[in-house]
Length: 318
Image (cartoon, rainbow, N blue to C red; front, side, top):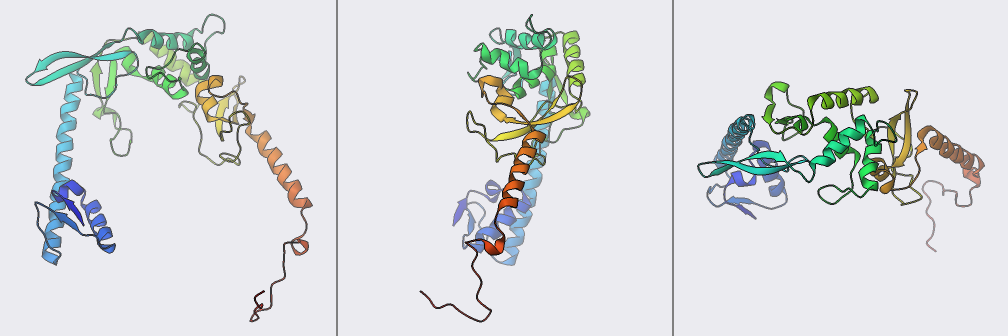
């Protein structure tokens, strides 16, 4: 028996509650509500289903009103919660009734790290010229400049800093759906004003260079498409599985290679293993398998192959 205060505490989705009520019943488990005493007859089942529809409707209405209030809160320049972007911290701004409104302000301990990342991308460190996202990832890791959690920098965190409009004073709120993470229309996005860390001219130059360097308009990432050896070949240094990644050569051509995902995200500080061209490694493995199969004995001559008894006959037990 499963006991809940009300059926809405179990699920607030009409489909989900009916699905699991039937699944529990199939396994001999009954769902009981303390405040809604209903039986198992058809009338009570219908009442439970109607209440589930009302609960679902009420939940969606509440979510709509809460989101509308949070959008307005953001438009007024107040922070809605969650961790602030790197380079900012949360401070109390004013009190309205019992609620304390909060805003973002520049964090002096992390702001220079953000400015350094932008400078490295556009100018480099003075010896290398403009650096790519992967090279920038290695730069703080090699110099023991850690993230605010004390960890290593990765490609995703560096790329997020380079594309985030918060750093020019425009934090975007309500950009994706909470349930499926689908991107929302631009008209539903709320812009929250905050102190800028980077001037707009620098930010626009970074976006233009990112666009020019990446023809797919997305950050470098581990791909999940068809690859012969992804997940079944391993790094000789750390023993981790190799994954396929894409890159762009100096001549502008695209190429694919196998590499350790830790190395791809954090550079050599994460793993010193090599990156291997995908076509080359695939060909080597395929050629080796072809040679092994060609040199293997025929199926009928294999020592482990035993003739099957004729149909209708049975071997005596040993």
